[in-house]
Image (cartoon, rainbow, N blue to C red; front, side, top):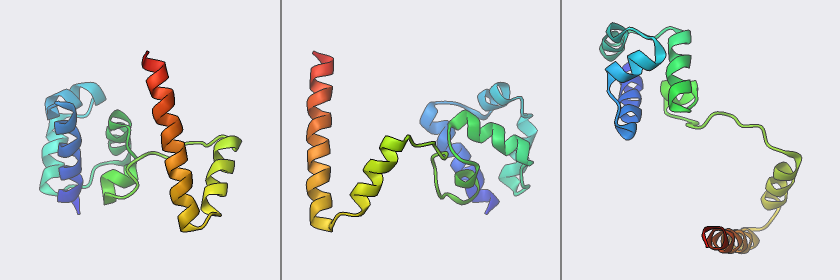
Length: 113
């Protein structure tokens, strides 16, 4: 499992064009810790938290590969939209999605003009 954790950290570093030395400098975590993690040592919770915060991912994602994004607080309006969507049939969900996508595409086009 720890090798997978380290692979996810390496993936996030590569995605951002960063090196372990950069992450060490940014988070204050000694580079030796990264080498230990690669060898299978479990990181301390506070160190893992710093890495997750830097990459804007959840600690659960780093540990398990699940739930990459951190939990975000939804507004009441967003919750209503999600609840409404979930109550639709699959056919109506497709229509809803196409409608929202069309609105978003149109709004983005206007915003850039």
